[in-house]
Length: 293
Image 1 (cartoon, rainbow, N blue to C red):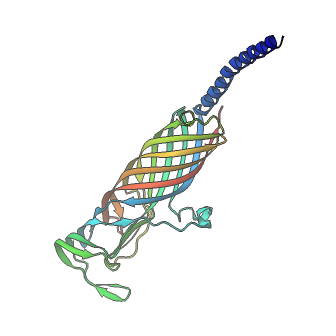
Image 2 (image 1 turned 180 degrees about the horizontal axis):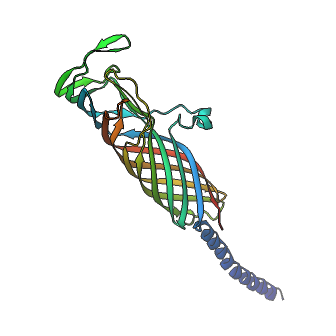
């Protein structure tokens, strides 16, 4: 009797587990399907960036100057983390990023974005110069200066009396783009839809509208927004999503900027031009949501 009872328990146990295993697999499979169902979702994000730039040749042309500076070095201008990072009245003080987008398919989205980077030409560096200057004497902080000369393959120090040149409010890259979005929960064995590990890769293209702070050869400081050129870039980043809606994203972007129409003085005919590559790392917080479902 005991042997028959044990045999019955074993058979029942095998039957129960044989029925439960497909149900568990089906449940996990359903979770992955839900995670990968994004078509129709909107998303928006805000965050901060750091950027670095290649050297560039910068040409300046005005009524009494026409010269090119070679291999000019520059830096970004990060602001120490503080309450102004969250202050709506000071949103452009730090180097910030904004995006809003829409999933046209489960794994693809389109995006409109704004990268507010900052670019500062490093003063007091020595660079090559070619061209001519004929501005005559001028005062800078009560001291007289004169850089009049025809320069041919010479070196010059980029002192403040000679030139201040920075896109600090800022190097504004406004773009549209497309991204691929892949979830790695299944590969990593994460069997929940409350936390997602996602990879995003994308490309974008747009225009650059810097607010260039310039003081050149005794001219009055100029600092106004102006559409100066275009940019394009490619990016890849890690997206961690919590409770299906909230996410943190870190992104690495490389790109190219070409500005052939940079305003430098109150005279609209006086311009600068430059082009360079950049690398940008950003950290953003975002929210995914449906408007129509």
